[in-house]
Length: 584
Ligand code: ARG
Image (tube, rainbow, N blue to C red; front, side):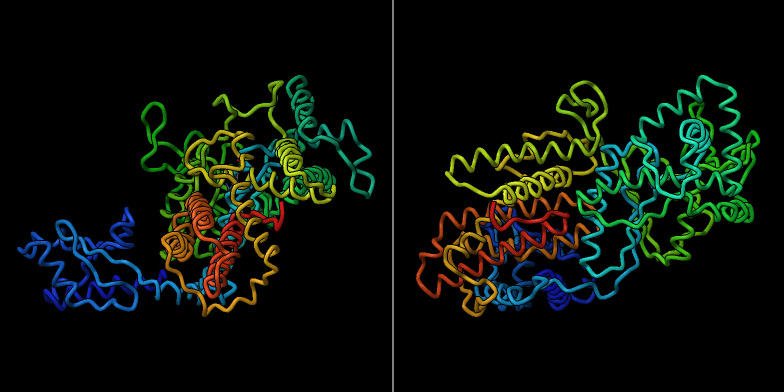
């Protein structure tokens, strides 16, 4: 349907040229979906915008356009309404044929893009030996969904975990490790260092209280950077420990990521400096090598220096990002690079993007985009905390969602007098609980802060994952009840006529447009909204139109509509990283 609408635009443009002459080439037809089904499905509003220029009444212009336009395959006879709107209403025959086409296709009629790109999605990216916090969870969920959508479109997506695995804190951590667990460095086996966050806190306390420890830690950084094998081993141990903890979360959420941490770009930091020198952008400021970024000022209103190399020779977060950007463009051959972090880092991205552009490192065809998101807040609107006031561990946060959904489920099963196996209940609770957390995050406009509420996200009504999972399971139960094999449905019998059927069908056919929009603008909440409306429209249809009890051929036609709804939900939810349940 998306291509049909694109074609329609071209047709209207040629109609304008035929009616009013070649100077109308390139005129925007102002083709929009109608706000009210009363006016059909699409509206062409170009007549109003041309009235002045052509010196004619909009209604006359509209008539002239219609006279030159043959859209009889798709639409009923166009109607002129109000001052000069052209209203277009899809013909059921066209919808039937479109539904039949997508019904036979695994991809629901959505072809891969003609020109696949190499796309880097930089997401999740927690820091070694530090807490993987709710901000990283948001990045993980949003990033995974964006990557899935781009992959579905046929792009070659590199999912990069830009882990914070380098920096001066490792001097402190390694020194502490040598103090408390020297045996860790001599055994060949992986060793369990326990809770690394607690380890980090204790190391920091030692660092703060003891100047001698500080001195050793400083030397340790130098050794590590020089590649001392013993220091490298200690560093590796710390990274492995964190990795194991991160993996628990990634496995739970079914997230695929390639780890390429900050340390990976170490070898390329020197090039950043030499290359920046040759461009003449690098300036010395109080012993540090900086680039003064345009459009940013410090508190005194002076131009802001972005420090590339500190006076002690050390490098910064931004230096690594510049090296990484160069690597992704030159080695990975990326056409598009997408970074997903909280909006607190927006300035960081704007600044190093600017430096890279001014240095001439970003070719015209490469798009670099920061995708910012807001904070996760507790129900009190403040930073999310446990009841005792501590930061929430992600593991606990996710487990809690599963436990709570399990309680909701048990209650419902009792009410429905159903007895189910432990395995069934555990699986339903896990899938629905984790889906609820993902969906709650994705369904918000990512730029706003979002309030984490178990009650809201686990509710079976409203724009929630459980609501949609129920709709999907309901369709599967229709097939069980009627002993229907959806894959055997003969698509040629699809023949819709009721309002609820038409409304549902038109919505199903919009999926491609929504996916394209999310792939361009990177707002997954648009897809959530689409799926929510799909579920609502399905429920309206299901209330209004009998399915299993209908007479043939209507019965099969409606079954096909049920199947298409379920498959649209399945595809859409999968693109959000959400699994479905046949029964719940
Ligand atoms: N490790 C960083 C943090 O926890 C996020 C890294 C995002 N990616 C990047 N290329 N800067 O805040």
